[in-house]
Image 1 (tube, rainbow, N blue to C red):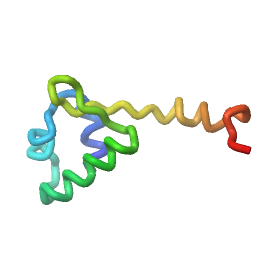
Image 2 (image 1 turned 180 degrees about the vertical axis):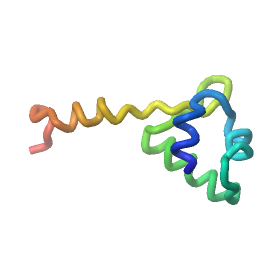
Image 3 (image 1 turned 90 degrees about the vertical axis):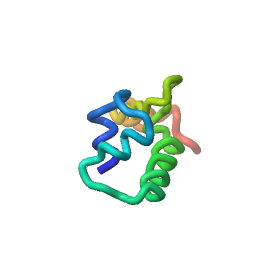
Image 4 (image 1 turned 60 degrees about the vertical axis):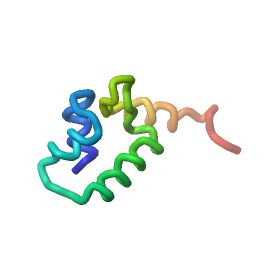
Length: 73
């Protein structure tokens, strides 16, 4: 739910405003854990203004996974 909402509204909300705008309510502690996971996994970033931005590009990930020269032997 959070992931899809961030994708649709990338760069529009800061962390707290994003939590308040979610279509379904969740506890703030749970929300913080989800945001932390998305930050660590490289799917979102926080810009200089504090807005949450979606940065994950699955097509590029598939491209690099398919390259044989990048495989660990």
